[in-house]
Amino acid sequence: MIEANPGIRFFLVITQST
Image (tube, rainbow, N blue to C red; front, side, top):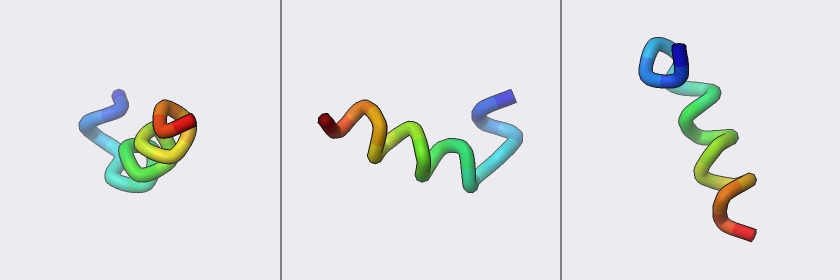
C-alpha cells in the first residue's frame, strides 16, 4: 500500500523525519 503510492512514501519520509 505504501510502496504503491509514491505520494504516501514522501509523506512517510516527512512524518518519520520528526
